[in-house]
Image (cartoon, rainbow, N blue to C red; front, side):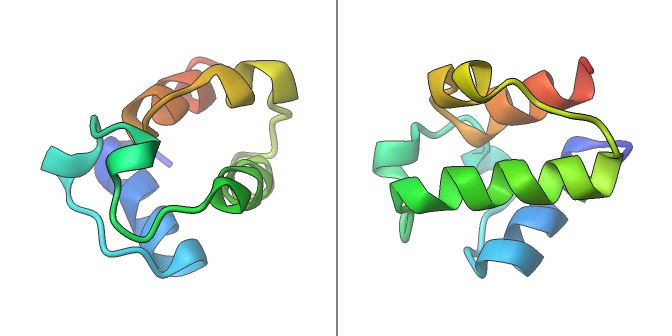
Amino acid sequence: MDSIEDFLDLVRDELGIPVATPEAGTAFDDLAGWDSVHLLALATALERETGRRLSLPEVLETTSLAELYQLAASR
């Protein structure tokens, strides 16, 4: 996963939520079709894709896809 676009492709493929780059900064609560369970599913998919572990407390502190991407990219 080399870019935010790659990350959003993962979101679309794994969760079926049609998001585009401008929506990446949208708060989860305001994202159409978002459910809190999606965050855990996406964290699992990120770990599988990157081969790196994510801290669950840090994942739960993120408020948008952009923040989650930054967390995953910083590992």
